[in-house]
Length: 288
Image (cartoon, rainbow, N blue to C red; front, side):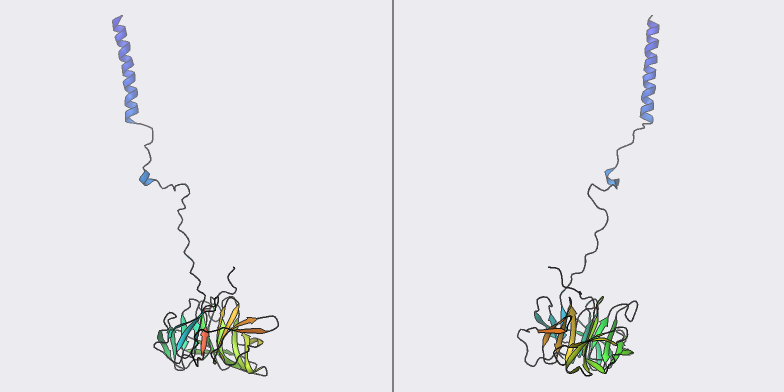
C-alpha cells in the first residue's frame, strides 16, 4: 500500500507546484497607482486658473492752469496739486483716453503728459484747439478711440501719433466753442459754447453728436462764463473756468444746477485753462 500513498502525495505536490508557478509568472492583479502620476484633482480643488484681477477704479478728474496740473476726487471733492508741468508750458487743454493717459496741447505743440508728475513728452509741433477730448472706440474709428476738438465752430480729429488734424464737421446754430468738450463710453458728449441769442452773458452747455460735431440740444446756461474745462464722473459734470472756479453740474429735467467746490489754499490769481476725464469714467455713482 505504501507505493500508492507515495504516488498520491507526489501527484498532489505536483498540482500544488503547478498552481504556484502560474500565479507567480503571470499575476493578474494590477499594481498600485503611482501617486506622482495621479492627475485626478483632489476633492474641492479647481484646476482652472483664477480669472484676472479687475483694475482698481480710481476716482479722479483733472483740471489745469497754464502751468500746473490739479487732481479732483469727484467723490470726496478734495483738490490736490499734482505738479508744475515739466517740459511744456502754456497748456491750453488736456484730454484723457480710456486708460487715463493724458494728452495736452499748447498753442504750438501736442504732448503726452504723465498724470502722476505732469511730465510732458512731445508728440508733434503745430496749432491745436483749446477744447480737447477723446471719443470712444466706434465713434470715428471702429477699432480705436479718437482725439477730437473744436477750432471755433469747426470739429476736428487729431492723430495722436503724428499730430495731423482732420476736419470732421461743425457745431452749427451760430455757436462757437467756449473752451472744452467731454465724452464718455456709453454716455453723451457735452461742450461749452458761446454765441447765439441764449449764450452771450454766460456759457451754455450743449449736447453734441461725437460723430459729426453738430449740436443735438442746447441745455441752457451753465451759470459761469469762460468755462475752459469740462470733465465727467458718475453722472456729474465738472466745470473749470478762467476765474479759477471749480463747480459741479447736475443736469435736471428742467435745467442745470451748478454748485461751487471749495479749493483749499487756492492760489491767488488761479485761472483754469482746461480739464479732462477718462472716457471710461463711470456713468453712475457706486452703490453704497
